[in-house]
Image (cartoon, rainbow, N blue to C red; front, side):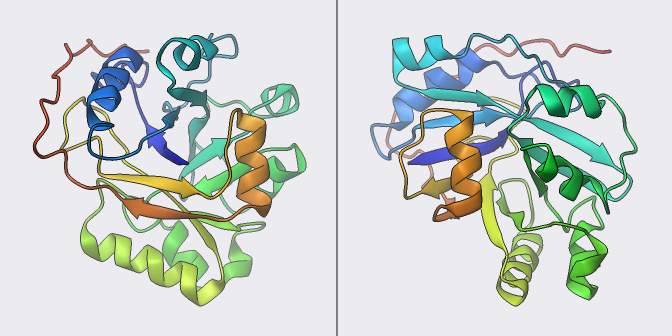
Amino acid sequence: MILDMHLHTAISDDSTASIDGYIEMILAYRAIHPFDGFVLTEHRQFTPDLHLQRYWDEYGVLVLQGVELDTNIGHLLVYGMNDRVLERIDVTQRMHDGRQIIAELANLGAVAVPAHPFRGSVFGSLIAADITEVAGVQVIEGYNGQNSRVQNDQAERLMRDHGLKGVGGSDAHHMNPHWFFTAATEFDDSLTSMSDVVEALHDGTYRPVVLPAPEGIDLPTPRPVLPRFF
């Protein structure tokens, strides 16, 4: 199963994309390569009552929701947001303690993953120097579609050196193939919910993958959406 584990819509203040726009592109892209769905990871925004099941019912595209948190040492992708997490963690806060919050979130039933750990982040260098500096880290973003090759190579080496698992995501903010269809995560298990994703991140087999470029297909160019500013 192939999921993009990191993308944004106009709910994030630096994006012009929409869920419907991504789905239009996925349906066309499936002509050349499997693509099952994606996880929304808006910056500091989580909406508990989004009705995302309808996208699976209507289009066969799995759409789930996490969040991209800010910490004092870099960004974290968080999967498995639940009532306990929302009661304890203010997702809108910009300066969470990056050295401790991964373990704290794990205790609350979520999985936190350092995003692009060698771009705009010191998670990568801290873990490389001494993995005990970041409590509880088990998974990193091993391939980010907006990283340079050097940055992704550094993340791959970090996974290998420390026995970490890795996810992949496009980090798309706009609906074009320079942003989308760049990277994703291939799971050996079939997933139907965020609970399944959390279980797979703990115990399953998965890997970051580079996606083939969408050549030879008529890829739609959905209308961009104006960002929301908070």
